[in-house]
Image: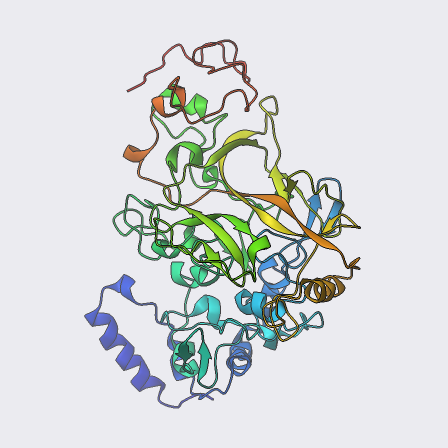
Length: 487
């Protein structure tokens, strides 16, 4: 598989580097003599394994591979929990929907519950290490790119030059990370609200860390990696809080010149002031109602040009320049476990941050709150997983909810009574990205204006605005407001 013309490749690389800025290209000389052609992704991985077998085995221990790390979950103890076995209020759950959902798995061929997680040849190295920006997985092929022309939503996907992409591999970039993380929930910025396509080349006002006019960071600058284990994780899939990444991982605990701001930092997360709004370029979804799926209702574009109805998925609401919801958070959250009892007459919290004003580990954090209606079992009073994709799924089986739920629940190892309804659910998504420059951070009045302040002080456990009803702070700093400077 390797060329004998190593010298000529090295000469070409030197010429290219002399003509371009050093930071413009990452060239790994040993990869230049990968020949190909390759008929599929696993064939590329087989070549990677000739030199990187140890790295592959390291990767197979990570949550990016297992989608189900061990963690300590409130009320459950130490369990394996992650994307593989949680339930959300977007496309609901993985079970029975593997081939679609696993198009964002860093592997090939996860089509059912028998996927071999022990086989390193199932790893997709290119999805994280591609430098061309050309590599992409087909939406319904369980992590594979296309190997022959294939149609998707009116567009033809053409086979990729896998050998050419393999020769360019290098460190993960904002674009490779965003290939999956920007598109959670089946669309750009649907799920998180603070991660979308605009972060590939963000303006300084959008994200001072990632902008070329700012620090020009790639994701791995903060999400540093050891043995392929990447620091940080999503609060929704990791309620145990073991690997959360906070600003203080890079910044000093007292980063401000003004003492009053550093005191605020003991109770307020950096993100609360430094991410004034989210979805500043692309709208984010805030409501998904499955009850209208299959009804053929009229789709009316909203003021952002977004669809408010899709016959496959139901009704939506979108928001742009959205002010987050604020709540005390101590690093842990509750989680709805698949098969757990719920009350259809109340809102079911699929997760919820934990913490209070009196908890010394808690800080006020910003969140996107996602709401919607999804199917539940009327007799067993549990939320259900619905098979959406494929010939027997909801979308290709004339919206037969009973059959789709029966199949989805069977894949999850649960029984369905045969009687379904819809109930309201809520999920919380912690905000970490789209950090504005310091001059765009919130000023005191943003929270301490009597009429327009963004914090609900009573909901946070105060009798009123603590700057107006002063007393000993929760950290016993009696002179906390002595040298307040509101400039």
